[in-house]
Amino acid sequence: MGKTIIEKILGAHAGRDVKLGENVDVIIDARLARDFGGANVVKNIRDNGLGIDDPSKTFFTLDCNPGGSDQKYAANQQICRMFAREQGIKIFDVNRGIGTHVAIEEGLVGPGGTLVSTDSHANILGSIGAFGQGMGDLDVAHAFAHGRVWFKVPPSMKIVLSGRPSENASAKDIVLAMAAKLGANGLLGYSAEITGDVVDSLGLAARITISSMVTEMGGIIGIFPPNKEIMDYFESKKVACENVQADPDANYEKTFEIDIDGIGPMISRPGHPDDAVPASEVEGQKIDSVFIGSCTDGRYEDMLAAANILKGKMVAPGVVLKIVPATERVWKKCLDEGLIKIFNDAGALVGNPGCAGCAAGQIGQNGPKEVSVSTGNRNYPGKQGKGSVYLASPETAAASAIAGVITTANKIPDEPVLFERKGEEAVKKVEKAESRECSTKVEGRVWIVDKDNIDTDMIYHNRYLTITDIAQMGQYTFDNLEGFKDFAKRPKRETSWLQGKISGAEAPGNRQLTASRALGSAPWLQNPLVPYTRGTQ
Image (cartoon, rainbow, N blue to C red; front, side):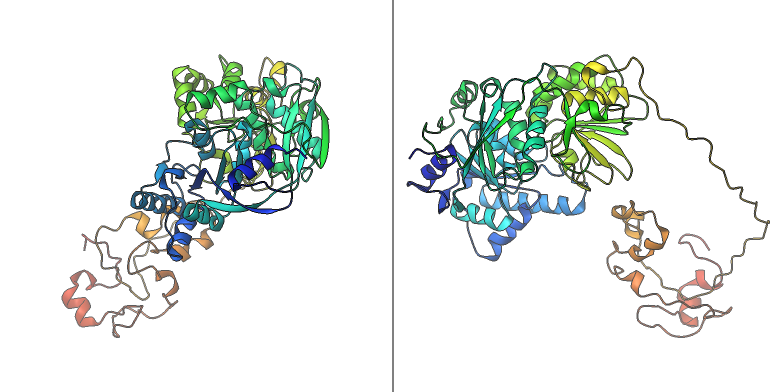
């Protein structure tokens, strides 16, 4: 019996014929770890006394939080850098963009190859006819150390895209139509081969968009048989590759036909990527923000589609538009071709390449009750923030940003839809407090922080600045000051300890000053009831 694409790729990398459902040890051509999970990969290798199988096939990609705006991400990134220097591993640092996209651009793996990463969307490698898989840090550490990892040969499903979409539709609309038809579990456990009339005409960017969202249908991977464009690209880069095609008599557990003939712009309603409907069904929904980017729609073609709509126009008043190209190469091309200027002139915020809205800490997160249109692949509650997220194509996202409401590129109104004022709310009048003399009398225990050059981040670190409840703030006082990290746990409440005189002795945790020490060595405390500020008396 003939073989499917996945059976051929896994068999070639296992060095033998493989059978459906069999566990096989597979050689991995490219092994990636990112700033999410990468530090744990390093820890697993160190804790188990392992080495690196082949540094030339091993890589770090720092793409989740390129800005390092979160201390944990910054620490993880530095752990990866230090390990990479030690082991001679190449690192695609914070300026390079999404790791799986970089792997394709740099030819780390070509058609017919294998790749694993700590990225759950590593299966976008199916876009080039390769096998990619997101795995946990233990499995990726094993691949780093041994160059191989085991997989169970999955059943294959053939997806036949029947017909051609309308001129107003893009690859994102195709994959949203697929999600609506297949549902969240329609590809669960399957390797899907994507075929049909339109497939051969789809370029790399479009294939990436579709392969990226197979995860949201439960699939292991969505594989496109490579076309001439894909093969020419990798052959020009002198990358080892093989145009793997399924045999005519290959065994598919299921064949699923999806009619995409004449479909127009689609959109997924908040909460479920597979809850996709024609965009016209939610047309007019007021929005607060728009995000264009991610591993699903961050290629140059996606940026160009958005720029063609935004050119000469402005984002609707009060609406925020955030745009993040997938990679440094895409970003530079946007700059060279004038797209960055178009985005900037339209009022958009353009970020450095990376995952952006899908990762807490970069660009694209939304707040409570914020309504967003996003070109990402997931809109589960909390994934891209605490607001509501509609998934759409770059064209629909850009059009909606201009309109101020959900709309499509062919229905942008002449004037944007503005936010409505809901009437002046009653303002509570605050009675002016009676004028009183300010007292300088202070009573209580004294704990001297006998250090110079204390800045505000030592008193209250900037990582807590998002806390708005004052009752929650005190617990973090001085926790960034060496020697006082437990400050908030140690003070004791006293109301009558200091009654106009100093007495007592030093006690652990709460330094009670003796009269001789206060009056002799600290003249600024001769009047202990006057607050002390260093440099004044």
